[in-house]
Image (cartoon, rainbow, N blue to C red; front, side):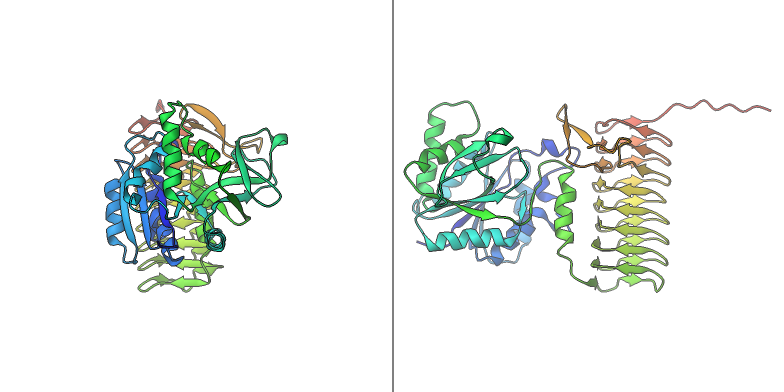
Length: 430
């Protein structure tokens, strides 16, 4: 039996909360989609086998991504047909482990971005005591609406309390889905028993762990490093910031052109064939992708602009994520997220600050919710065309292929495929 756990990466479910963006595991940060970035990190940590739980829509794309990787790791893909809970997702992987029920598994989610130190600490704890199970606990002073670990003085986990009142938290340790189980068969049996009980909620995995904790030792592995969970579209900015922080120095790839009067400040990456024209300024941390053009007098700061983009004359991009083939001309892109192919015309601005400087709200699946940000611009889907001098209010979401007419002010979310414009009466008199 291998002492190195089999990695199970949960990359299925649905991404409806990410609207107007598409599949979150495939969002690219730099040169690689998030899923590939995560998998390469696990390879570097010594994992030899991974099982990826996909959904019917992303299975083909994930298979293509895995085929393009050159890293040495055995990978299998299983499909969770319906998004009916984490327990069901894990059971899809069970047949691939049926011949080794006493072997360890390490469960993680593709959209949880953490430091390598967490995974190293989890593996270290397991190798010291091979028969235990381990759950990462994120230490938080402020209240977080998640599951809190109940532990005894020796660090043994006695239970998980979901979303307790702030003054009734059993500890300061929030459950992160970085779970290492020493005997996969025992866990799968416990999950299956929960489904056989015909309970209608979708927390079968959590209840299975609770049933095991009374007889088997679960220990907490405390963690205080970075943690970004990509659950809502504005979280793209958090994950982007994490990856930008990993740029060291100023890297200018082959065939890139940086004009003598352009300015690079701080940690900056300039991709292959990119062009930074006179008097443009790139303020790090910043990432400029391959074949992207940053025009005269433009400013890009604390942002990630991917491949084949046009950042036109005097355009400002600040604290924003811009995907491939976006065009921006004499405009302001502030604390915003653009999917592929967005055209943001001259004079356009993404307003990012409420007049009362309060928290920016967003509508997700029909409900208003806080974003945790007092600055948030627009989130714009693929191939949207925003006409000249259009303005978007803080937190607005614009769907794919939307066309916004010139001079239009967008105050609310726009569904995909719509045309939005203001009527104007033209009066010409002598």
